[in-house]
Image 1 (tube, helix red, strand yellow):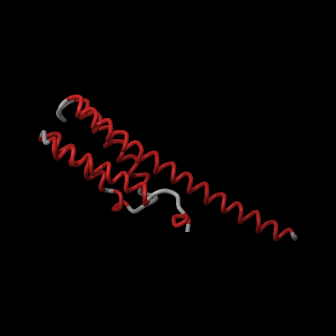
Image 2 (cartoon, rainbow, N blue to C red):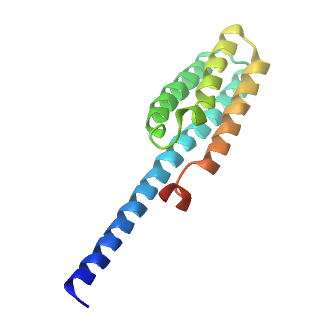
Length: 134
């Protein structure tokens, strides 16, 4: 093999390595962001059940933390997917805050379930895949 062929082989392997690295990084960012949303949702459910309602400081603090974390992660995720594809979680978090102010537990819990549903769905279309590489 000539020097040029070795150079081509090394270049191709380097490019493939960079692509795999980017996909692994993307997958980690997506999984971490969505796992934190899931964790906050379960913590909010537990706080609502323990305190027999949504009008308390624990739920308010957790909801504020969820909102802050999601909007920070959403800004990073927008580099990987279209913002309109992932905005539903932010919309539902805003609705949850409104329902909490109104004291509407039923609608609050319905929005919380939607956040969990969206989080689960996002795992399916975001992250590393050969389609995203190409």
